[in-house]
Structures are given as C-alpha cells and as structure tokens.
Amino acid sequence: IAAASVAALAVAQNAAGKRAELQAGVDATKVSLPSAYKESVQQDFVQRLQPYAEQASRETGIPAHLMLGQAALESGWGKRAIRTAEGADSYNLFGIKASSNWKGRVAEVRTTEYINGVASKPTEKFRAYNSYTEAFRDYANLLLGNPRYAGALQQDNAQGFARALQNSGYATD
Image (cartoon, rainbow, N blue to C red; front, top):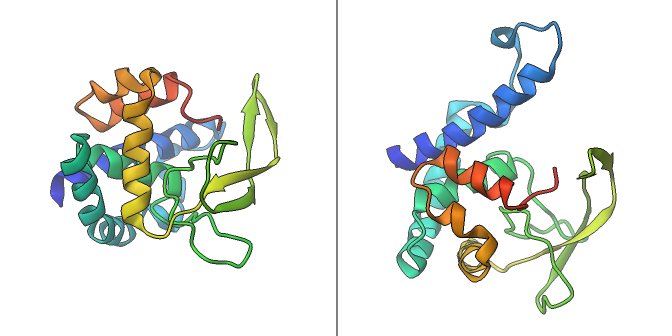
C-alpha cells in the first residue's frame, strides 16, 4: 500500500500545488485543500482500490501504483465520482469518455473542457462500468491499445506517467 499511496499522493500534490500557485498573492502554505487531500481520505481510497489496480496490473503489466495515481488525480481521490442519471456510481475513476464505438452503458455529465485555452461546460458521455474491476481493466487496455500513450507506459514514477499522459492528450482540463 505504501508505494501506491506515495505515487497517488505525488500526483495529487502536484495538482494541488499547481492550483495553489494560480492563486495570485496567496501564500501557498496557507491554502486550505479540499477534503480529498486529507490523509485519511487518501488512505481509504488506496486501500479500497488497490486490489483492483493490482489485478489489472497482473493482467496488463501496467504498474498498479501508476494506475492508482491517475485514478486519484482524475477522481479527486474518489470524491468526484461520475454518476449516472439515476445517481448510481459509474465506477469510471479515469474520466474515460464514451465515443461512438462504445457499446456499454454511459453516464452523461456536465464537465469542464479547455479547447485552445478557452473553458467550456458541455455535457459529455462517459463510460459506465459495472465494477472497479471493469474500470481498471478498460483503462489499462485503453493505454495499451493506443500508440499515443506509449511514452506514458515507459515511465516508472507517478509524476512522469501523469505528465506523459497529459502531453499525449489524455485530458482536456
């Protein structure tokens, strides 16, 4: 658990640090972080999801701690769950959108997208899964099946992995 916690924490701290830096004139050491950055929330997230990440790692070879780090970053340590119209959990920890070739369930949510530096708030379709097992497996297969993520898969630390994913166009926020 320790390696996964450190990796996930490193990714989340990097994101929190960037947000703090954007607050002009505010001492970053005095910025109050959201509850998702509390150690107990982070430990619970890792303990709850590590078995799924480890299973996907055994099946795909992608290190579990890297997947957990990305899940922590994308989901705010599980605090920003993507929900279906009925309010059910979509288990989509990675913010994977449902393209036209997706045949599974979807969750439609309003999201923030940045295109050419301009924020917009469209409603987008995201993949919905029946379990965290499906979510981790699909995420790993998405990375393995798309050559643009090859650089990310060559990383061995959370910061390099997250940076390479972003540079490859993984997210638009």
